[in-house]
Figure 1 (tube, rainbow, N blue to C red):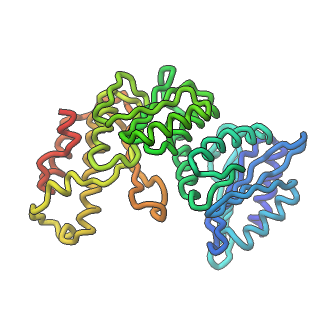
Figure 2: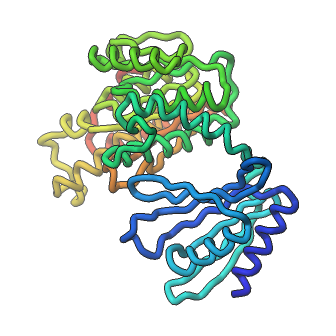
Figure 3: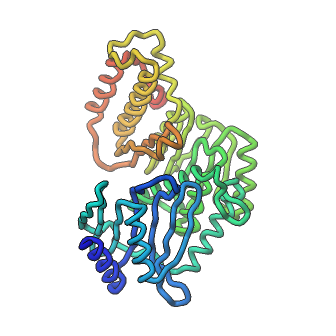
Length: 384
């Protein structure tokens, strides 16, 4: 158990040197109990340091606090019974232990992932959770006591994942104050409210967020909820994406805007020269419908389900290339797990100052269109 002893020695040293960041336990060895991860952070309660364990289950989170010696025993037990990977993050290094299927333990060290420590106060996060719980309750994600309603657990995880992505995207972003954000196709506003709370209440960033949706009942509900939460610079407007006009957009968001509504949103973001464009495309009907009856040489396209998936990838690849042509660095990745929804791809565009070879990118787009007999992509038409 040399690796485990080294792990605990490193933990003790990091606490003594005041450079401990956190511990994460991952890769559960059994999924029957619903425990997915355990996160450990340092807190101070009544001037005493303790290690706070957040047990993340499929439907809820449980928090328990322990002394250092108690925490070591708990961690040892969890690694023996429940998890295959433990990672200790410090400001000096990251130290991980990995347990194979046969029970063999190995370890590895790497450069530190964090440059700063998280806050250790116990009472302040409590206050933030109370604020967070208010809008979660009004939106029907949590009950009156602030507990996540089991059937809304996936939505709560989606919110947390979304904020994690946003945090990474804006950390080095340059923008003028106040930050102007538009959420196109905001729906009931789950992610819109979460973003406002995170940026304004937690990060103390001066920001205005506008949610756009065509359904009057949702707009009225969201505006009433924003008022009840005291979110002064969060507003919702009833209109289509095509109708919305704004000279200044720092961040444009369009998550699951149906079919060509994603292209309408991308067009608005590109035209407004937005610093950051965040989309999660949905439906992808335009190219599929325009190619009905067109014979394709690719044998993959013989099968309906493969044809649908292929056209989704083609649609989003062209969107990404169009963003690149307009001086955006692009990323395409999985937003949330397939177990929650298959429409889980996120397409990100970050404005760049670097010059691009527009002609070369245009040739790539034309090559894809030629291969699949595509006459036009809707976003191309909008921008032209």
